[in-house]
Length: 112
Length: 112
Image 1 (spheres, rainbow over the protein chains, first blue to last red):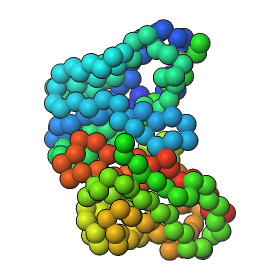
Image 2: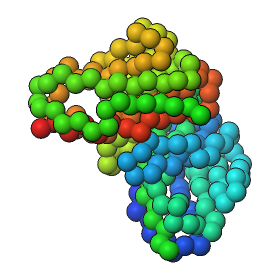
Image 3: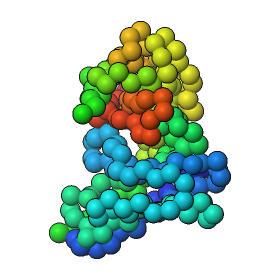
């Protein structure tokens, strides 16, 4: 069983919809939680970073972590066609970002 | 802005060939990483380096080796390419205590 499971998708929504992207994990030692966005034929780029449980908001994006349930989510409000990409959750135990464990990614398409 | 450059974006190689993938970063980061990304398997760490001439195996090092002779440059070597190594390869860099890693744009390798 994988340490990190991500809702597989793909997901297709109309412009303006609220999108929820989700991951579950099994290792309670994970302390840091990240969301990366990856456009087609590009490398991933960091979108949101959260330490421990709680919510973090950045514009139209909200990252939510529930450590008791081992569940993290990324919400996108007022989704735009430019949000069409693959979203990867990632998490790590310590401070070295490169030793993150990644989910498989969810591909989102926002239709105009 | 951090720049991580993977010089070869698209390569086609024959089975048994030796393949070099080069990665150069301009941010003086201590850590450099090589991942491969495959549909359904997500992002998997092959090798990483935390200093010049230092390296550690990741989750899937078999069939690969690496070289880091200078801080800014990290090479991935496929000694004898096989069709199972057809994949997208991503280089990344980060600081020792950084919360994120920065990815290159990826190298698409096809082994025929």
